[in-house]
Amino acid sequence: MVPITHFLYLASTLFVIGLLGVMLRRNVLIVLMSVELMLNGANIALVAFSRFHGNLDGQVLAMFTIAVAAAEAAVGLAIVVSIFRSRTGSDIDDLSLLRD
Image (cartoon, rainbow, N blue to C red; front, side, top):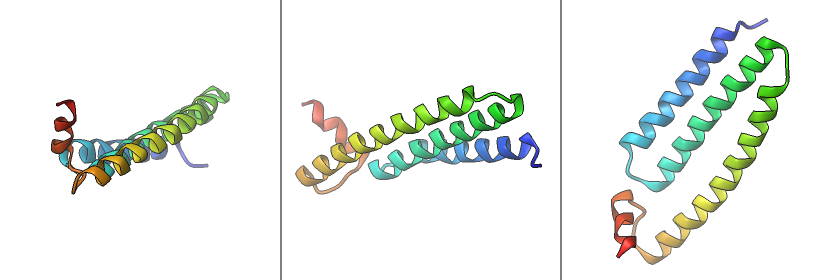
């Protein structure tokens, strides 16, 4: 049986890698993938705690989070494709021009 600390180390590593990707990268696709990594890290932690406590509440919440992440990815990719068609690149700094 794998101890819960291994799952929490994995979850925190995924979350930190995602956080660094969001903070350091400028490409919109990389930022969206980093957000997905952060959500997956949180899901692993939810499932690990759910398994540790012996109930299914964390696993049900993780399933809802996966569904919301899929919808977020679909909407985010649609926005990125729309921006990429109207502009030459998908840099985050260029997105501030959309307000004008």
